[in-house]
Length: 343
Image (cartoon, rainbow, N blue to C red):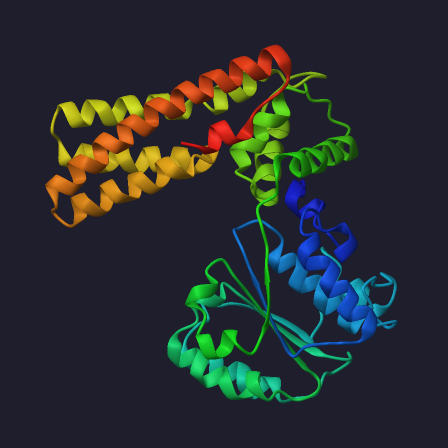
């Protein structure tokens, strides 16, 4: 089975993390100086490198030559904690979406007191940390506040404001960002070169638009295009025209449902439009779709009608913008990404 591009090109060191210098450089400096904190909070949009950076931090802390900003990649710990490595018994990664209750937190707390089996530090990476319940955070509070010398916590979340304030105040908080178009273009070109794939210049801006600034999402779109189409030596622009054509069709379905005054069809059409909008990175439309669905669910027809008017107007503007983007990309290879994000 072929490895997905976002996994194949997952960074193995902070030097390989793209577009997050405001996070990686302070961490590298702290590691080089041996200034290790007991708890970190990595926040930011999905697919920007939070969990990957947490794993790199664990790798840097437990490298035989560490703590170091540049893991050697050869010692047993580095090999175990490589992007596709088997993992280490001393580095525990928990998904709080399914293990965020008070019992899970107590179990983690009890395990955390044990010394590392074979490494310098025991590192607990808690992904989706905003899903930990208040009771769960309270169960962790004491050990996060006064941990043993061998213990490091890394909380990763898309919603840092939902992390208990008393926990958040005891961490070093590093906010990750969406990648700007120029940085994303460089990453995509690097991956295409590594894969031996030739892409027309006009295709890159549309992949960037579809990814919405997320490195993982952009690589997933690129992966789908390169694996799902038979374009010979060149990936034709028509591929992305087809991929981005979801929005106008979904808008038409919603307009039809509104004309028919069919609430159930409106819900189905709005939900489909929201999914299509998320796919191409039209986040403004996706948010208004959510407002429509919430209003219908709450039985608030006035608010729902206002949201529908706003939604159809946003869809019309987005459709026009997408048409202009495709035309401009086809003729010049240049693409003002902000026009696609305005929807």
